[in-house]
Each structure stands twice: as structure tokens, then as C-alpha cells.
Image 1 (cartoon, rainbow, N blue to C red):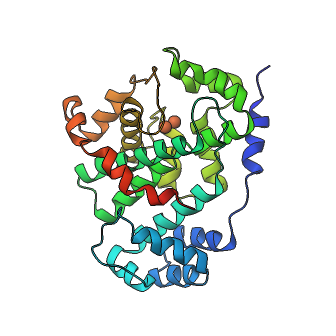
Image 2 (cartoon, rainbow, N blue to C red):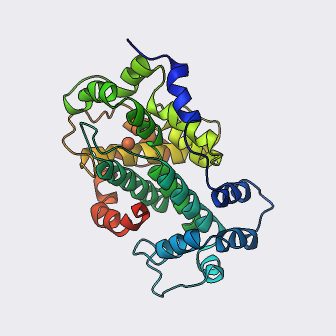
Image 3 (cartoon, rainbow, N blue to C red):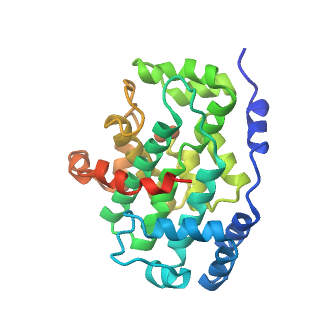
Length: 287
Ligand SMILES: [Fe+2]
Ligand SMILES: [Fe+2]
């Protein structure tokens, strides 16, 4: 018997609240008047958060060429947006549990897929001439794109595994099957998670729309949504993280590529070295 939408949505309400540090970071992130100084103050009052942020900033992903030990220096080198995005990424990844007994993939494989989509989205942003600071926003949007799937699987692993079979044996569109089974698909549910945690629109919309590609009326956000869609397609196709899929649906791929002005033949060269870059970003998943 399929679940009702309200039953599924209740799982979003049951998600843990952020720690007070993260709630304060979100307030700053959503306040256009906030400064880098406000952000540093909040992070530096929390030793664990400070360690995590500095650890990531010094990881291969940022490739800074010098060891940075002060948050002030980080802001000078990378800017407010990057620190904000790093903090949001850390917050969500550490708050979402992905179970390890799911039939089709492990928690590590799930997060590796997400990491691949983040890196892929960032590659597209760089190709499109997006500024270095804003490229990290694409990365975080990709990293978080399937957050709704983690919530669905957490509560209903067997039901989700049954409908996921379509992904592993050629078949129908999974978001439609999720909607039939749970009253809502993982993308829309992810949008509700993003709302609960006050993620900025630039992250909420790619999470919510990465399969439907419904236009938002904001061309910048539409490009982020399309970048996540394309990166998701590429990671599924190249089996980064999640393996043995047969049903990689490409029916919206052309729309997404058109939105990004990328030709179909340019996709493969663009993602040369993606696997190595995913390796470099692995520190994002250490908690
Ligand atoms: Fe998805
Ligand atoms: Fe995905």
C-alpha cells in the first residue's frame, strides 16, 4: 500500500535541528548585510567547526599551495562565499544519515556519487566562466542534490529498493515511481529538507528541480539546476559512486545542455579527469 505524501513529509520534520553554530551560520548566509567578520566570529567560537573548516580549506580540493591556519587568512584567500558554502556543505553532510544496509548501494557509495555530482557541476561552472567563488556554490548544490533520497531510504529502505530496481534493470522513470509509492519524489522532498534547514534558494532549487528542470524564472538558478542535472547524468553514466546502473535516464539531458550552451560532443572532453578531482575532494565527506 503506497504511503501518503503527508506521512513521507513527516520524516523531514523529524530531522535533527542544526547545532547552534550552524543555525547562526545560516542566519549570516541568508543576511545580505552580514560580513565576513560576522562569519569568522561565529565559526571561531566553535572549535570543532573551526577545525573542520580549516581541514577542508587545506585539503587537495582547494589546492592553495600554503597551509592556512587562521580563519581570517582563509577569508582573505577564498572569500566570504566560499567559507559560507563550505560551512553549509559540512552542516548538511553531517546532519544527513545514509544507511549502510540499503540493497543497491552503501552510504559511502551514495556520498561518492554526490561528491562526483558536486565536482561535475563545478567543472561546468568553470567552463561557463562563473567566478571562482560562485563555482563553489555549484559544488555544494551538486553535493546536496540527492539529500531527499537519503531521507526516503532512511525510513523506507525496502520500499525504495523495490522501486529502485528500475535503475538497475532498464525500466521506467524513478522519480515517477517514487511519487506513486511515497506521494512525493526525492527531489521535491529534498527541496523540503532544504527549506527546513534554511538553505539559500541557490541551493534549494537545484536540489528540488534537478530531475524535472522546471524553469524558475531566474536564468542564473536555471543554469545551476541544469549543471547539476548534467553532472548527475555523467556520474551515473561513469558509475562514480553508485555502480551497476542500467537505466541512466537521458531524456532531459539535451534541455539541460541547451540551457548551458554546451554541445553534446563537448560533454566527454569537459569531464576528463573527473575521477581524480573526486578523489581530491574526498575530505568533504570526513566527519
Ligand atoms: Fe536525484
Ligand atoms: Fe543523483
